[in-house]
Amino acid sequence: MFTAFLIKYAEIGVKGKNRYLFEDALVQQIKYALKRCEGEFKVRKTQGRIYVDAVSEFDFDETVDNLKTVFGISGICPVVYVEDEGFEKLGQTIVEYMDNVYPDKNKTFKVNARRARKNYPLDTMELNREVGAVILDAFPEMTVDVHNPDIMLYLEIREKIYIYSEIIPGPGGMPVGTNGKAMLLLSGGIDSPVAGYMISKRGVKIDAVYFHAPPYTSERAKQKVVDLARLVSRYSGPIYLHVINFTDIQLAIYEKCPHDELTIIMRRYMMKIAEHIAKETECLGLITGESIGQVASQTMHSLYATNEVCTMPVYRPCIGLDKQEIVEISEKINTYETSILPFEDCCTIFVAKHPVTKPNLEYIKRHEESLKDVIDDLMEKALESKETIIVRCDE
Ligand code: ATP
Ligand code: MG
Image (cartoon, rainbow, N blue to C red; front, top):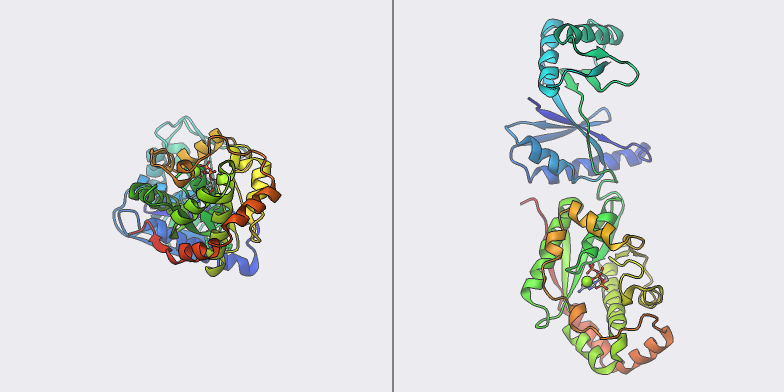
């Protein structure tokens, strides 16, 4: 029955010149999401509205599911178009519409007509009244409630007449591409894909970096990260995933630094390298999946020590969430099942039995001194090892 969708978006903060950028980014992200769907669509912007028109057969549920991945959409309204062939024909179509969409007739309704084309023979008030009468006539169980109706039936008189009444909630947020770019430190865990999703929701494009430690971490562990990036890219758009060979740095730290400080020192080098790549690729911040107190390397003292190597802002959107809350988001965005696959990651292989929970920054810096003869060279080699994989989910 439905042949189109009206896309609703929150308009707060999208005035003037911003509005244009916001809408263009939204249209682009809608097209990206629709490429994953059966069928052909046209996306058009008219008079401050965005419509998705199906120009072939399509799968309704699949299309809605994919539109729900587009940040910036607050509501998705399935629309029926009718040619303007007189009021009687319109009345028939509306009766069919109500019958199909609301099998249970025990409902109140209100008609909300709008004329974008002023030469229609009835004015708005008359339309509301006449259409209401036709519905009451066809379905005597239905009643009108102008204050708090169960069904708000919208009619828009344009070249054609548009009918809709359902609003399926969208994901909210801002369209990706309206707010710069940031570099996500993406591991194979539960938290970092969620962190990427959350920042991307605010309109931020993301790239990602993964620290790989072959042969201690396997190809399958790397593939898992690629798979997670692909799942996140349903929401964020294409992700440039940089894979860095971190083995030699890890071995050097293991050899020369106290084992209870391994994780912190390792995390400091990860942040340094990530920041370096971020600057080269015009990112304006780093993103991690850290949450206060979750593990020894995420206490306030540890975060203080890790953060100290960066000058860029580090966004940690999971910082105040409990594990269970993060798990719930990962289930919602469908990354959970992949995240819990049991492939080793480099943080778990070189892990100390008793990591410090209150690292002292002065000690850490002193212990890092023992790397000074090799570390510049190792950092350079790690950066040279960079393999960039373009991850997208529209082809
Ligand atoms: P996650 O579930 O995201 O792996 P975690 O709870 O396992 O998080 P840690 O392993 O301490 O936490 O890592 C903290 C953060 O550091 C991660 O959320 C991620 O942003 C980053 N990180 C850790 N390991 C890697 C890695 N191998 N490559 C890239 N980033 C990493
Ligand atoms: Mg991890």
